[in-house]
Image (cartoon, rainbow, N blue to C red; front, side):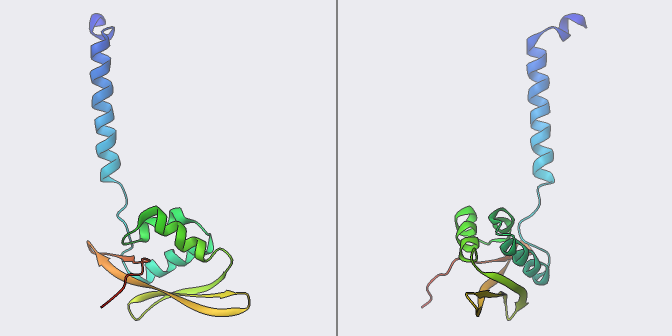
Length: 125
């Protein structure tokens, strides 16, 4: 037993098995992107934009990842977010910038049973 505990190959095998176990556990408990309801999604998107935190917004996006999250948060950097609601198939962000009130619509999609927003504007037609 003492010889096995001093053998470097034994410790390499233990380390490798432990590392694989950790990866499996992290993947299993990794949160799914999006939210369970569109209303919950609207609250989370609003909070991320109010905090100017693209890290909170990124897992709520359908596509685009970090670049789109940064761009979207940057759009609201100088704005005061009034509220965000789910309405007519989109998260509607009501905000004020330079004394002017406006709305920003983020279409909502359902992916794998969870709701996400699509902040990427694509041409139609």
